[in-house]
Amino acid sequence: MFKRIFLIVLDSLGIGEQEDAEQFNDLGSHTIGHIIEKYPLHIPHLISLGYGNITPVQGLESVSNPRAHVGKMREISLGKDTMTGHWELMGLQTKEAFQTFTDTGFPEDLIKLLEEKTGHNIVGNISASGTEIIKEYGEHHMKTGDLIVYTSADSVLQIAMHEAIIPIKRQYEISKIARDIMIAPQWKVGRVITRPFIGTNKDNFKRTSNRHDYALKPFKKTVLNFLSDGQKEVIALGKINDIFDGYGITSYEKTISNEDGMEKIIKYTKQPFEGLCFLNLVDFDALYGHRRDPIGYGQAIEAFDVQLKTLLEQLNDDDLLILTADHGNDPTHHGTDHTREFVPLMCYHKNIKEAKHLGTRTTFADLGATIADNFNIEMPVIGSSFLDTLK
Image (cartoon, rainbow, N blue to C red; front, side, top):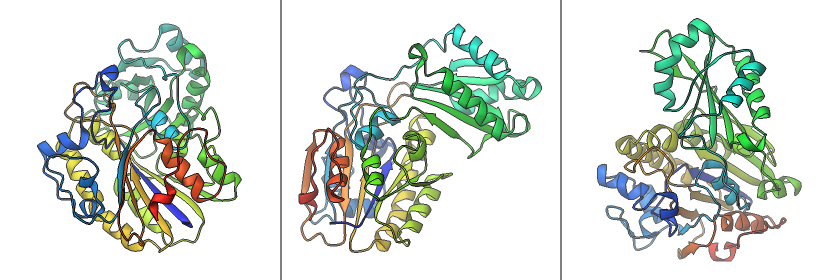
């Protein structure tokens, strides 16, 4: 039906608490709703698609003739992190949550093993903001070469290192060592992340775009594998390649910002291929959600909306554009964690005569099932296709 599908994950842009939000300590969370309370949005292109038609949100205008089929999706995986969300989008349900070390830091025996295997002492070992911890330990790291290890509310071990002190290639080697160690069940986290930074002192330290995520490989094949097995292209942009550990991906490009990600996906509209182009826009989550900045988040949504206009104009008649998210991250909520929310679903192509409401999908995996159905490839174990509704 569609030759190319462009899928954009608006990382963390949830649309209201799920029924099980209390189990995740997320009652009352509503990412887009609370952003709008703090920062009234001007997003004409998202509104024209029917963003405000998904579900009633004060300050989010509905339109009488939306340009896209819209709905929302429920997450059924046990967790509310990047990997569980993306993996479920592509047909996998995670039934055992990844471990977190938010409250305690990593165990002493793990830290000692990391020090032994890497040849570096370790400082930090707390849950912290990445920008704040390099202010605290960056100068010490420059003098000693000690690794700055920290975690967050996510299932993650992060290692901050100065590019002039430890070369990027060695930084990646160190992170791979950590990933190999943390395959052990008692320490298994979703991701190990290299967090390079530059600068001369705590007042000008700045993280660079050389971040690299070392994720666990999906425990079964996903729709991405079924696409590549079926000789379709799977083009991964941003951190998609890292999230799936390259599994099922035929080509990839890193991005340095939301703006760069949108420029890259627009570039791919001009290239002939058959298959999926899959982009994650991480700034919403990393720069604004976790940092509890609703104003910055709102401004980032507006910037995306401007580039969305260009993307819509570049699509071919046999292209499908899907916009969604992978979890919530309400910037007004307590703590700095993701939030358990429904995610939006907007499906646009140029031949929609009458847009339909797709309802509340039972699982994120309905999206992956729809992609598989479109390309007539193996279907995921979970998820129901809504392809027929998109005509």
